[in-house]
Length: 271
Ligand SMILES: Cc1cc2nc3c(=O)[nH]c(=O)nc-3n(C[C@H](O)[C@H](O)[C@H](O)COP(=O)(O)O)c2cc1C
Image 1: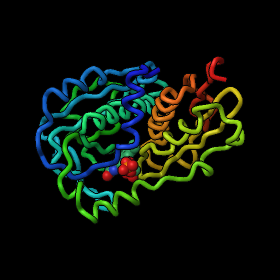
Image 2 (image 1 turned 90 degrees about the vertical axis):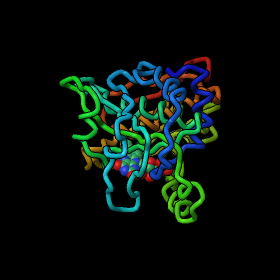
Image 3 (image 1 turned 180 degrees about the horizontal axis):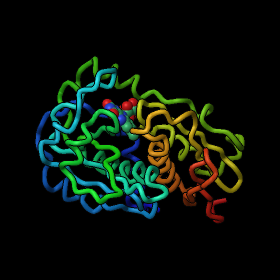
Image 4 (image 1 turned 45 degrees about the vertical axis):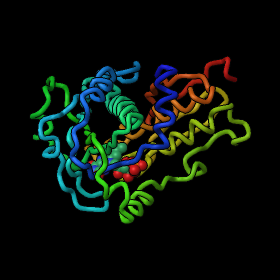
């Protein structure tokens, strides 16, 4: 479980975070990188199976200029590589959960980020980190300060507005009617709804019961480079920190009943 202090900081960051693809090239102060360092090896048991590494060596060369509405990542001074240990049974969820904690911490420091699992050069990324035989780079984020075109450009604002679109809660939540949800559950589901996902596909479904909330994958998993369980790991972190910030006690337990991914079991005192 994420500590109370981290949860409160990261809860605010959920509402501030958005993907930034154009950077102004300014270096990230060492003090900020040092402050991120303790999180890189994990901050909670669910991070087991994943770790992150700072890539400071010509980070911009790692990203490709993929065509499409999402565009190219330009001029990031630094990147973070999210590394999965594929021998771990839950490495995909772990990578999403760990990576998003670091992304939210960076957001709270005023740094911009963008999850990237498709538009990067694997050989360039893996050449810059040391990997064990069972490890691979699953995703990266650039890290830095946004270019002024990102901050003020009307086009960028329009693009961001549509990229930020999310499915309504009514289409991703089933189970108990909202009036019977325990206190804090609505806020936790709303935070999960805002989670970033590859191609903004939001491949999750939640079911609210008397004792637990389950998360399942929805739809197919056609892109092995961006597994839907990684997205679910991100949404699980959002749910957990919003639950903690809003007084809903409980913890995630992994599930082996696909398409169910995990269940957030309420601690009795919160009912
Ligand atoms: C696992 C993952 C992989 C992603 N891969 C890419 C990518 O390869 N290229 C890219 O430009 N954006 C990528 N994104 C960013 C998403 O497009 C973005 O999060 C989504 O559109 C929602 O927008 P927001 O992050 O601004 O809320 C990825 C996001 C996630 C969570």
